[in-house]
Picture 1 (cartoon, rainbow, N blue to C red):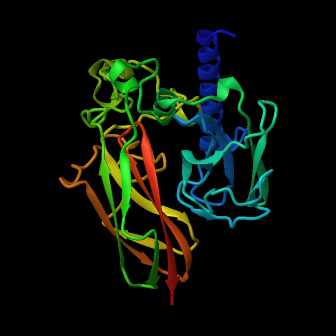
Picture 2: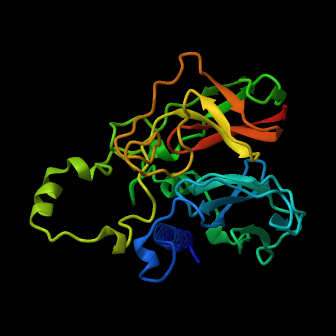
Picture 3: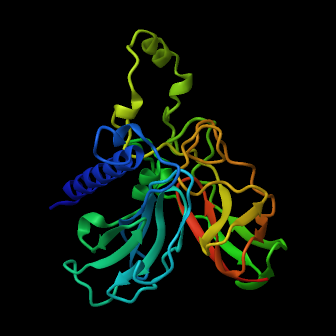
Amino acid sequence: MNMRTSRRVRAARAAAVAAALAVTAAYGGGTPEAQSLTYSRGQNVSPAYEGWDEDADGTRYFVFGYMNRNWEEEVDVAVGPDNGFNPGGPDLGQPTHFLPRRNRFVFRVPVPKDFSDKDELIWTLATKGKVERAFASTKADYKLDGVARMSETGALGAGFSSPEIRANRPPVLKVEGPKELTAKVGQPLRLAAIVTDDGVPKPRAPGLGGAAVSNRGSRPEVDPAAATRQQHTRSVNRASSPPVRATPNKTVGLHTTWFVYRGSGKVTFEPEQISVWEDTRPGTHSPWAPIWSAPEPPADGRNMVQATFSEPGTYVVRVRADDGGLTADGDVTVVVLK
């Protein structure tokens, strides 16, 4: 298989998987009754194998994400038989706190040195009485690069690329201060991270989702031609229609978000944080929401937040720097006392 064919196969596979996940998640199942519903809570979380990537030194990593089929419920699953890996032991750095909806490229697991492309690493996740598994392998068609990541998250319009966007590098993020902290229930804890970026992709106008390169992007709500056509088109039930895109539209622009990666108690962040999950609902503080734009980054690159914990326990709070296309993560472990 030549490189061009391999890329076509990989792109087709990615689009098919994404479309299947979107349809299943949005409609809640395969029956006509289920296809008219979406769910705020009560549904399970499905693990997802995104592909594998390779560092400059040749170290390979499996990359995983997940699909929480709920729009509001955040699900907690402790490391163990219900949230573990085989082979390699149960804890390979996976989340235990699952945010709503689709979360892509969440964490990486080093590929064992003795793995061949016929071997598999299996992530098992049991939630809401359902057991689902993601099977990871190093087959050539599963290899990721920056363009694939940006395309899958919706930062690129379908089929669009440019030399500039292909040269994009993830933001550089550094957690400020100790990475292990102690806090008390109800008392705000200050967290900070310093972020720098190469300025790529350039921020674009609100509503131009999928426009990390200079193209028309996606802005159907202000497309006069589309509006005119709609006046002469019979209304259709969108709940029974397949998704227009295999991935959502994402507005680009550097931003930083703090969120809970592990820990089951409620954590309140001040100020309000930008969503890291694909929240496509209008009016939400999310890069995937219509007419959202990234806030102006701090002049000194220092992003600060106050986190208040409702219950004692051990938490992992993650900070993510996102330029709209690629991301960088840092973690802080917080032991919360009464």
